[in-house]
Length: 132
Image 1 (cartoon, rainbow, N blue to C red):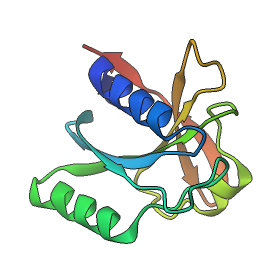
Image 2: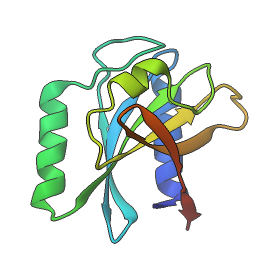
Image 3: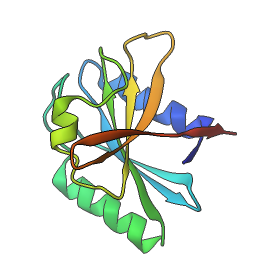
């Protein structure tokens, strides 16, 4: 998956704004390049879990489909832990066709985003290519 520095920064800025809670959202792509970001509200208001606002999530998925784009990824942040799926993340990975991106603010001066595929409880790192 290819993601621009601008999209990377948008996710990091959302994560910082919503700190100490996890943020979440959806990324849409065309030809394996992220072309749209849909930030969602974490109704859990938790620093260790997220639950996207259902109406916002449905609207975002419809917007992706209406634009003939692909649901590329579901993203969320880990405010104080590494960019690696937690047991809760694995248990709640309901979209096998999508990657799961995690933005870690553990090292505030150097945020990290990593991608993963989660299928039947198995975690595989998804290669991200950062582009201009």
